[in-house]
Amino acid sequence: MQQTAAFPSWRLEEEAQTTVLFIGIRKEARSQVLHLSRNKRYTLTPEKLKWDKFKLTYKLLSFPTNLINASDTRRGIAKAFGMWSDVSPFSFREVPADQEADIKIGFYPENHTDCLESYLHHCFDGITGELAHAFFPPTGEIHFDDSEYWILGNMRFSWKKGVWLTDLVHVATHEIGHVLGLMHSMDPKAIMHLNATLTGRKLITQDEVWGLHRLYGCLDRLFICPAWARKGYCDSKRKLMQKHCPSSCDFCYEFPFPTVAPTPAPPRTKHKLVTEGKKLTFRCGKKIASKKGKVYWYKDGELLEYSHPNYISLKDDHITIVANAINEGTYTCIVKKKDKVLTNYSWRVRVRF
Image 1 (cartoon, rainbow, N blue to C red):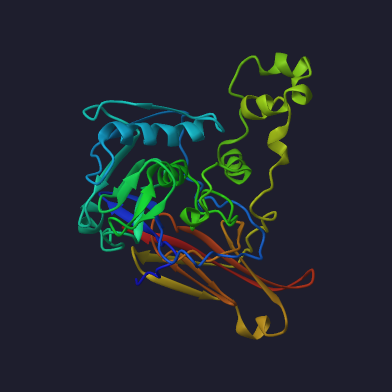
Image 2 (spheres, one colour):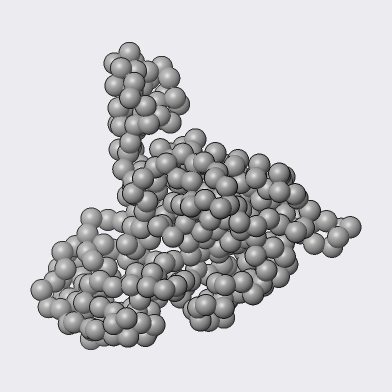
């Protein structure tokens, strides 16, 4: 599918018998900053893909050929991981390239295995365009475009070389967020926003922290947390407790939820067994919807609020999905007029592999 220059698409990677999602980040159309009037919040994968442990290892399989050396690359990647370990229960440790690791990182040319092994997404596109892409848990891979000119420092244009110099730490931090299970945020200030490189902001925001809390639960990192809470640290040392002891001080209950309370799926359900990759469109009764009723779409009981390119498309009274392992589930359409339910339909989707 054709991509737009300003917005990165996220696509599906099919390898062997595992289907995972990955998200890319682009840096073109720098003047086109996205302004959103809707609520600004993080987004999780529809299946809430996540790790089952908090101690993760990573290894670097290749290094950039432009500008920075291997030592600076390691330093930049370690700094990006450190930003996430500072605000979450996760810890990250680099291991040698010949050892097994949870997260594999490399710098690759345009025609690397991503596009050679799957017809669902593109190769890298050379200088500018897509900078990197990452895979959701538990695959754990980050691929950087080796055609880019990577640096440690603020992204800027080099008049001498005639190219954009891209900050490795900034992009790596964004991609690590995907590896941990976060999708693009609707908050334009968040580092997980799809136009993150346009903002120049390099700090992980409260939005990402809320997303991790929502996905992994609110966990205390230190065993001494209850004792600190009894000493009054929740008030006197709030920042310390927010970082290490969110459960002991109930900081985890301050974050907003990405959706409203789910509506139970209606009993009327049509079952669909389809081949992988097929596009499915479900319509929610035009006659009923035309009577000024509002259409709500749910997946497995959770409200779908936004379209996702190449994945889920919401348009008024109908929804279009691509059949794959991630999209399996029950899709429900409910038409309401105020508090009255006018009609509802459900479709149960299973994929034939």
